[in-house]
Amino acid sequence: MLDLTKLPELNENHEYLIDNPDYSELYERLNYNTEDYLIVYSFIHNIQKVAKELIKNNIEFAHVACHLSDESYLLIDETQA
Image (cartoon, rainbow, N blue to C red; front, side):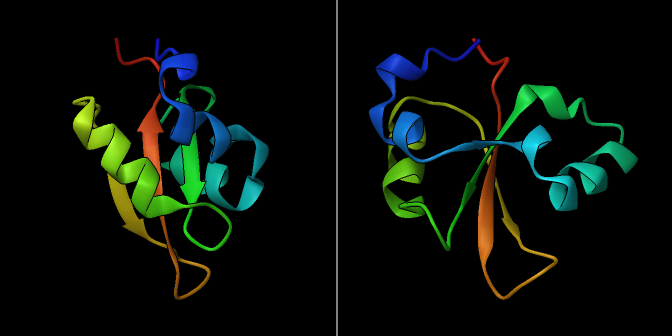
């Protein structure tokens, strides 16, 4: 499980995937356990700082084009050790 207290940018700039039905339904259809994922939206969060912090800490994430807008988001599996 990710320790968000050690990742200040992610801690301040994330939502839980399960809390957004537009996104969680998409991933549920792909058999993701949506309760395990965090999402960082480029239109409301500092996506560049979060991505830099994730890379620096060797944390895997996906950068995905949004299916609802011209924006993008990061998808992070919070069960990573």
